[in-house]
Length: 144
Image 1 (cartoon, one colour):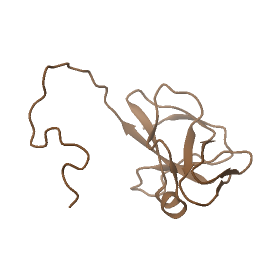
Image 2 (image 1 turned 90 degrees about the vertical axis):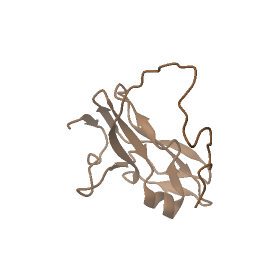
Image 3 (image 1 turned 90 degrees about the horizontal axis):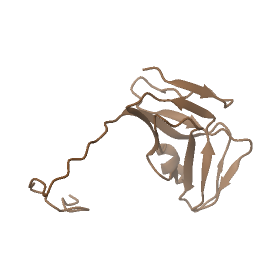
């Protein structure tokens, strides 16, 4: 699949690091370092503008190493870039650690997965079919 993209950053385009990678890393495109204090959040711009085909979205997800090692994650994970959005892709980073975290220009801050999606058509009914789970939610299937 080819996706039209404008790169106003000084960094290379996102790319797959391995043949089996699902996501491509997004890099910070900032004029000066941004310090995120504990529990602070900020939108970090990427310098990327894209034109996704209708029926696809770009999912912006945390990088596992950044989350595990530094406690920094994507706040609305996964964030969605819709096919009709033409603005700059931004990443809402949050620092969940107890230490300041400095975002540097060019740093890999998130990953992006291109995903196909369906559009639902609601069929309003009076009742739903029965299942063994029923109305059991949050933890109802157990933990072990």
